[in-house]
Image (cartoon, rainbow, N blue to C red):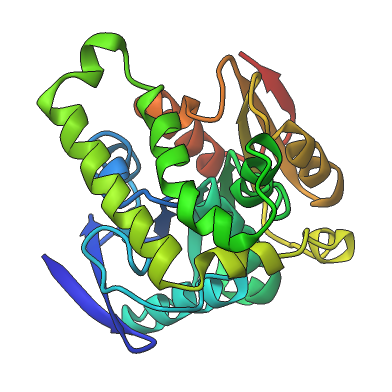
Length: 273
């Protein structure tokens, strides 16, 4: 396991094809880790590119942190990772919360950012906090912190088939995910940080210079945000796939091929598959 120190915390990092002429950094979503990229997605990009994967703080095998889960701090962590690895400029692929980090990075550190692939980024204000408060009639953040882990785990469980739910692998994943989320909810500032997050400003999106891929599922609950990003980011390539928010995780090879094609071309149209 490779770890490096970034902004005071040990970060778990894995790299493929370090001699690639250009670098792509992959950012997982909330509760995810670099394993979601490592076996199917990253090897396709690594045929040409230097690919860097890392676990967010308090995720996977990275060190647990207590604070700094807002997008600005998470983008600063990405910058620190690049500096430690001596990467001057990088392309970025981010999924969900990781895609939000990618957008924030492109806004704040545009000179260090090549092209970006945004996979299923929700609005920063369209967070699980508000969704859960509305659906479960919760009134305070303390109630959210207490109940959110069980609520989210139930949603994750619903992604498994009935046969999968009883398998040892699924039980191990659910147990591990619950442990991570309990830590994030009960021992860090994550919920408060999400609560304070603001939508991306249209002017900031308009100033993103990076060519940007937007890849969303046709049944995603994040389509309103995708339309906003497509409208305000100057150079976008918009792909809609039949599926929901989990589409990119369920079809890693197909998505990796779409992302690779995007990085290798300069076409910017809307495709429906």
